[in-house]
Length: 291
Ligand SMILES: [Zn+2]
Image 1 (tube, rainbow, N blue to C red):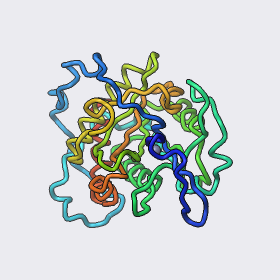
Image 2: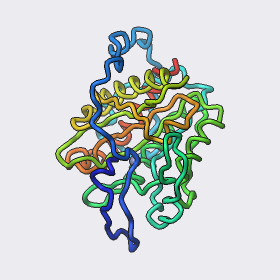
Image 3: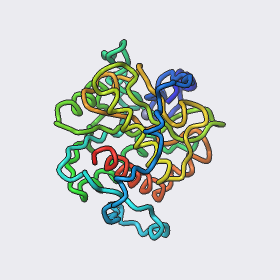
């Protein structure tokens, strides 16, 4: 989210004052980064990825989907036996716990709030509801493919957890990879998704970049959504101000799955069909990264 847009935006939600603030705080429009996409990485389908394992795509929602028959093939190679941490951005109860989530914590590059409320669509569909739904769909698909899934919060988590705890869970779980799921609160005229990746130098920077490319390519192909028109470079956005990325010792990216303040993106993100495609595309992304 771009707090530049929303900081100080106070609205009455569910009977409580909630300050809408997000994850991608003060996200600058990044200048093109020269080394961001090497030609070898930029090509989408790797030849080795050709034998995709069968499209067994159990739908956790079990909602009959008219689009199911034309759902993209989900690749699950390399997932069995791997531990994957899923970090659903924010918590739908954060608005009732402002004191707790506003506590300042060390983000690894300055102090930041423990967590934020996240954004929402103009008609009130919360980012936290979106991230939770996509995360639980993704968890179901990954478990069906034989992966061990660890979530950074569960349905009973009262608030947060803090970005420091979200990172710690990833670091201490023996995970091969961590994926954090968000929705952005960008300018209404901007649309599309972007993938935030670690910008600080360190051992997880390069593998996280490969993960970011896998997520970008699979998400774009699997959902049909285009890369962001208002931030990043071709869907990638290296960041040094995100605690969740600064504190991780495991390869990790944060997906901003669309702009919830854009009418077109919001309409998609409110659709269970789209969220299922999003989850399926992330399965393929993780498979491509891990296999
Ligand atoms: Zn967020």
